[in-house]
Length: 443
Image 1 (cartoon, rainbow, N blue to C red):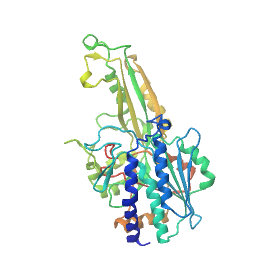
Image 2 (image 1 turned 90 degrees about the vertical axis):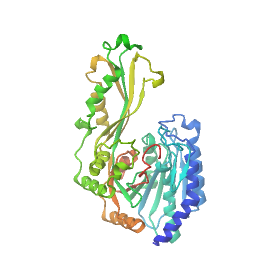
Image 3 (image 1 turned 135 degrees about the vertical axis):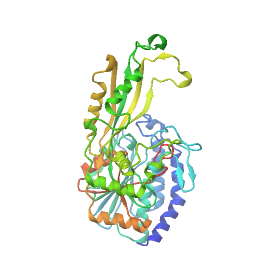
Image 4 (image 1 turned 60 degrees about the vertical axis):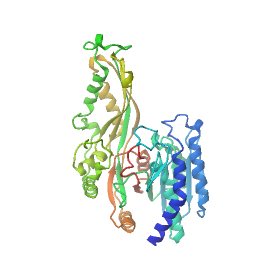
């Protein structure tokens, strides 16, 4: 492989062909079905599918077979097959659906507003995960341009990953005879600690969550009359959350949510920490003097990859400050999201979370917790020597630095499903979600 030639080939194609496509893609609000139940009526998902397939057809990759698979009442899936020069099979994965708009975007940026600032393209979905289809095909085209042999490749691009990939198992079953048993699975939907070497994801956290509601009254009453007699629903919420989390440290108390961290993952975290240093927390846009939960980079990496963490991601029943009067509100609802260790059973953890929140309600208040997702995490199988050697060689060839292996804190439900479906496959999970890209305002 001529490294300079392949780098020049990819960079030219990326700048001339891919960047314009990503700019147009960012403009389309094709939110995942969980966030847009009327996605089919709105037609945004089909617009992206049409855009991507038109680009694929213009690439003229020899013998590429392209199909948009549509199962009844499911989101569409782009499926490609490229014949290879051996019997080895590579499965490449990405997704095209997007997270919702969210709030907190930096001035001058927005979810559906593509902004190219230097070498970074801002807007919803570009780095998560619109680039995957372009990267996969560009890599294969680069091999063919140099006449380098490769195994047969299957590329699947789904449209409901941000909803937990509920449609994907049905597509994998429908396509199983055509794909067979892959030797290598490549997923371009993860992150990196910097842009100076190849980063490989060794594990992904699971995710549970739901809506917690505390009701104390049938209607609001004046706080001057009721406070001191009627318990505040917000205070009850604080009590309930204290059952789960140590408010002073953020540590999750119950054993159902915690696991013993494997020694090798601790060693990898320390190695990644040596590479990243304080960048592990300095990359986040902290307000003024705000600090991270601790200063040890290795412990922070383990926190975000192997330890559970609770986040309140939404609330109802609270008026905005301008409209807030001296009223004892009848109820408060919050949306909870808990990240779980990679090998923690999400269904068991979700049931335990509901039990902890609903049992023995303070003041006999009406408390309900309604779970809305439960996705177990994933841990990579032991890497085989041929893949480890190839990863290190690639990182040294293109970056002149060794590859780094690290667990990531987000969830990709597809990986756990594939790990069970293809237990003998090797996995290469990587991505471009790095410094200044991991927050909703820059993703």
